Amino acid sequence: MLIAGLILAGIIFLLIHFLRSDDTGDSSIPYAKCASYPIVGHLFSFLRDRRKLFLECSKQYGDCFRIRMFNQYFTMILSHTDWTNVVRNSAFQFSATDFAVQIFDISRVFHGRSDYDADTHRLYIQHLKNREGLRPIVTQFVRQMRELIKNDKTILEKNGNTSEWISSGLLEFSHHMLYQPSTVALIGDTNPLDAEDDFRLFDTKFHYFLIPFPRWMASLLLSREFQARSRLNEFWPKTLDPPGSSQFHRDRLEMFSNHSQWMPDKDKAALQTAFFWASLGNTIPAVFWSLFYILRDPKAISTITEEINTHLPAVPLDGDEDWTPEQLDACVYLESAINETIRLVGTIFMTRKCIRDAQLILQDGRTVQFKEGENLAWFAGASHYSEKFFVKPNEFHFDRFLNKKADSVPGFMPFGGGKSICPGRFFAKFEIKACLAMLLRYMEYQIQDTQTIPTQMKARIGFGIAPPTKDIPIIYRYKS
Image (cartoon, rainbow, N blue to C red; front, side, top):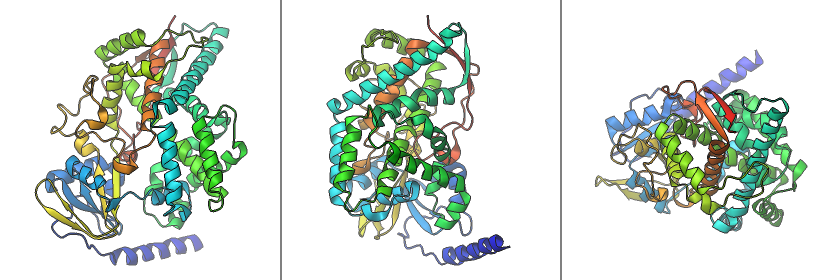
């Protein structure tokens, strides 16, 4: 009875609170009535299928309209040109602190810490955006992945099964091949398998942490996921400086120490969880989708395999020669196929908050007024699937991005934009490319159903690269 009473009281509170919410946005921007419900607004439609929601609204209202989730209004700016102007305007800013608080339970002590922001930016430039800074991390990832494949093959050799086909799910296979090598290359030998179950649980429901539920309601609905997040935060202090960690990780720990006078230990652990998830949460499904699209396209698999054999040394699994970033860069068809895959599945929902009154001139000539505190948002799928930017946008063409600098392709913005663009995007691309190259070099595959394209987990669309709703069966074996 007590729980029922609390829930009823909470519902009454929410009804009163949300019915009192005011819409103070520019009246020239229409409110999207399609798929909107009393009290919750577009929340249910957003959770159910946000790609469908935004594309349907854009057909009725064009590239600029407003939606509501509970008492939060968002002005949707779907034009790639208009959104580029948004991210260049200092009046519209991404609140990384709010994002971190909701998802990773990081406190608000980071808000306004320009000294910490500057140190973090310096580390990203030094290690993740600089070729020489990336080189040792990429090299270590390749070594760790080769070691994993060698160990898996050794187990099969002991049983005399190296030539037999092995059954697996493609997503599970991608997770297995990426999870441990990536973690060890970046963070070191922390015994990452000890945190694997909690990572899976947290990652599966990661997107629900962003829903604007009251804290008490979120902890009730996501109790198992909250516990998994807590265990991950408790995992890192046990192995603060593991063997084999990257220089980037060591410099990051030193930076935490330099700010220890105001940074709680709890937040240091939460930042590690955030970094851990960011290194895997999108790259694992990216490997799944890239491998799926390449394997079902005979011309793609033939061209890319030939390219890998040409540019990447045929190093035995027990060899010690490394693939370099320059050699991976030479695999331009593989690079193009990865970008094309990300275009199809990397439909990010990007937000900005207006920090002072401002105006925005849209490409259609309208001038929109924004007041301090208003929210703006952009959905990548609106341009990624637009014929204005891409011919036959619903189809996979592995050479669509051939010899093109992806960051400058109009309509293509899967990693965000402006100052908040994903700092790890260069390492992520190298990691995905090296992983795919190694999987195609040492193994061969068969997908039972190449005609059916799996559906993405709709609730996850908008938060990076959504995994499939269910795994697809494959068989693979090691090449002789």
